[in-house]
Image (cartoon, rainbow, N blue to C red; front, side, top):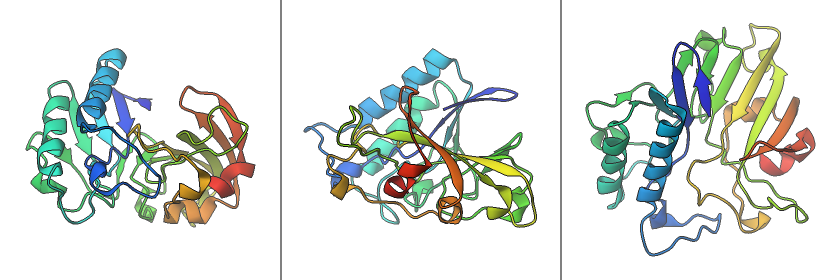
Amino acid sequence: MILEEKKKYLVISDLHIGFENTLSSNKVFVGKNSSIKQITNNVKNLIQEENVKSVILLGDVKSSTQSIYKNEWNDVPYFFDEVKKMSEVILIPGNHDGNIQKLVPDEILMISSKGIVIDDTLLTHGHTMPSENFSSVNRIIMGHIHPVFFHDDSLVNGQRVWISLKTKKDMIFPSMSGEIEITILPAFNPYFYATEKRYYKKAISPIIEKVKNDSIAKIITLDGAIIGNEVELQDLL
């Protein structure tokens, strides 16, 4: 996602560097080589193509939770070292980023897992409930869910998608009124798809649990086509 306020930001989520160690129930298949160079090059290409000045990582940079996998000791610092050559990097830790401070170079700005507010937008990983301190925002951008679309007759069956929600603001912030928009980013890791629906593991987010039954939704492919609405949310969230 490109976010343009006073400056231009590239916002990405869920790299899950090191995921090869524990291939999840998503039935992820990779080759013999690590995916780290592909993921890193994808980020660097976007920085160059979009001419962004800052990259915001919405958590789950690494795949382990509290421990640090053997390959993460090399691959996570490699990723940060490469990206910081081209852009400022802001890290909002996710639930898989326990002890990541041991892997983060000094030049990386690591902030609270509660998130950061830019203009009227809260950027957060999505695994925690935002406090009333953030109630002035009109938009939430989050990751954590890794949404994947399922429809047997669709060309994008099993592929990563975006989800855009509109809901009542008091569902998130009880003291407020009006509407709030929630954008759920797909996992940036290109291998986070599901070969079959039965292998899709839904992530639990307190934000989404509050709003999923009372939202207007758009399901959007990686290239921007709208392919569904709130009817599909039960399968995705």
